[in-house]
Image (tube, rainbow, N blue to C red):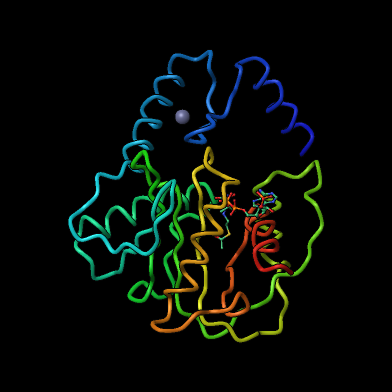
Length: 226
Ligand code: ACO
Ligand code: ZN
């Protein structure tokens, strides 16, 4: 019955010209006025969420020619924690997480990458962890499997069962789709390693990724040099 489902989806796409917006990620049908309307609204909300007007006391962590990284802590003023939360929600939606709470919200540190157009284009949530499970190699996604099914299954067997010592857990890492492959995630993690623990620099072995997606794993493998 999987094949039938796929057929219906394929037919639907041909008939209604389904397309995915490169910016906000919404799948909609360009030929449907209703869909276009919904997309316009969703797209605008997305842009509003990543818009960064700035605030007086920013915790600047790093500056680059194309942007900067700021840190938001749980006890920061509401306007800061709200922005961090809203961006995290965008990331969660894209990662397919539904209302996943943080393991230690009071200790979670949110790093935001703000680009020169004043948009939040990167978000990393780092939390203290005592142990982690090393990510293992896993096969490619079979063609007949949906991304969701794959990720569901993939999470169960991507990690070793032997816990290893880690200090900093990366529970979310997200970069705006149109700003990927510009080293934003790399620079954010370098900044996390330099600042997560006061006065010490964490090695790549001391950070751990929780629940990596296929994208996340490709990145993590490269970043950690494994
Ligand atoms: N495919 C293959 N290699 C990749 C990919 C990819 N999709 N993404 C990164 N890499 C590798 C490359 O070698 C890259 O170097 P190169 O561009 O010179 O070849 C290197 O990692 C560094 O990449 P960055 O530019 O620093 O990574 P980027 O800023 O693009 O962000 C990220 C990577 C965060 C995974 C981004 O693709 C993303 O947000 N994806 C959607 C959300 C997601 O899946 N996040 C990970 C979830 S796991 C978790 O949250 C714990
Ligand atoms: Zn859009």
